[in-house]
Length: 198
Ligand code: G3H
Image (cartoon, rainbow, N blue to C red; front, side, top):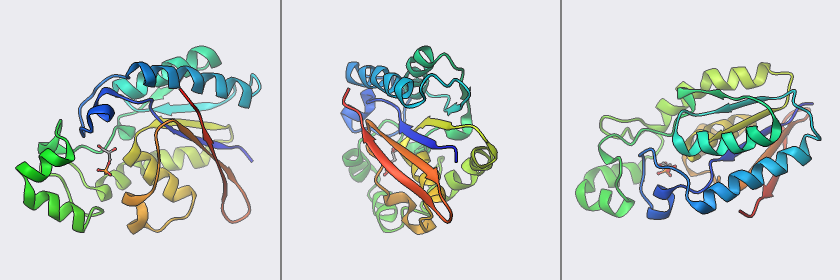
């Protein structure tokens, strides 16, 4: 059975500042992760270039994917459907700033992160519906699949392949600098997590 590999982009400038949204680029550490991730895939795939790779249209994901592709000698599909959850009016703010500026929104999201929709942005339910097409694509693929994307996006994909209930999605743990390898088995996907030091 062909594996599915999920990874967040390398550490970004906004990750360091604890800000949501934006389209910031990788930090030096994030760039180092991207290079290590490429090396990991070279070993893991043993030179097999017959794979499918998907990423988002955001700088941090594209730059991570570029490093991987350069080493692997493959191309990726860059899809808007894999862009991070849109935090609307909260774009560029830290969680503390959101709490200060929009206390009601902050509370509402805390109470119901799944259905809360950022004003002029998205909810997790919105994200789930837009990543559905990618899920079908991944399921159809007979080749190994690599997805380099974002926390909220990978929570949705991971939940689908690992059979988590929808309400659990916003709380799933998808850390930076880690690959989640899912191998389809009889009734579920077998999971391995590989930490990659930048
Ligand atoms: O900015 C987006 C984060 O990756 C998603 O985090 O949904 O837990 O706030 P959150």
